[in-house]
Length: 363
Image (cartoon, rainbow, N blue to C red; front, side, top):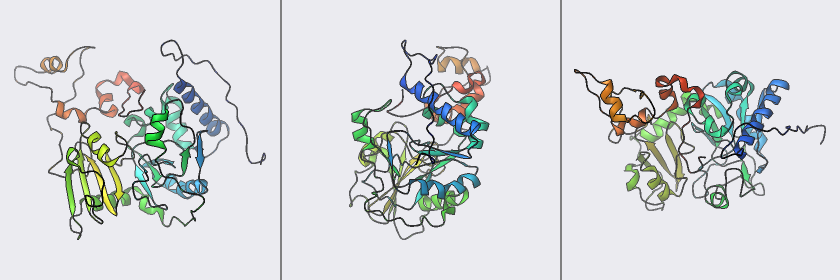
């Protein structure tokens, strides 16, 4: 056993980052991540690394899964990680054990990355705190996806931690389904090329938008969605739910999922229930938004930086105008610019300090 494993010890360091006079635990986590990944990629020269937090228990096919999916990570430049965790893999839903999906939302919690990604992009910019939120920023992820299993291959054995509480654990962690090692009999994952970018996008779009099948396609606004039941979601049908940031929580409560979007692909969440497919589609940002529910970007929209802190949107628009052209603030268009990649064009001096997030676990 000792010949197969090496125990690396990260020397404790006093960090300069302080919040209310003390260093937050998340800062020590970020420092530890950077030290570990620098050591394994730069000093030891490994090609791939799997990160597993110390409060996670893994299933028997955990390593088999990563070994099987690694060739996709090597072959597809639109992928940047493999994870063993499905944020919305609640037992309520149908979760095929040998299938996987793509997500644009970085999941963490037992994940693999490549040496090239760490060396060329992440190491030199890795943040001093809240590293996982930084991984979800568009200027970091660069619109790349991760592959995750429908049924998670790890489970959290600790109810409390640096960013978790007993309540959080009972609501969002404990109900997540994992492979039961006592009853699970491994089956080959089959041809995994369906997860390659062009194939996956085409199949995803066809399933969501194709109205030529014999099954019905139902359209809902998020605040009109019925709760889960076999009568509301009939076998074989497709349910498309259009949401905005203001209405997603209403749909989430009806479906008993996280109240902020996670495990989404191109701003679209795919769930399976009672042999029906449920898609929650962002009305602003998803390329799969239905024409009748889609909110489009105004072609005259411009991003104008304010001249200083405390300057209102109205004053900024007024000063940007002229005797011939006037501008106004439109809150309905804000979703199109509320993104670090867009804002970096208006405020290049911010650099890597731009952060974005939407979630109950934000610091």
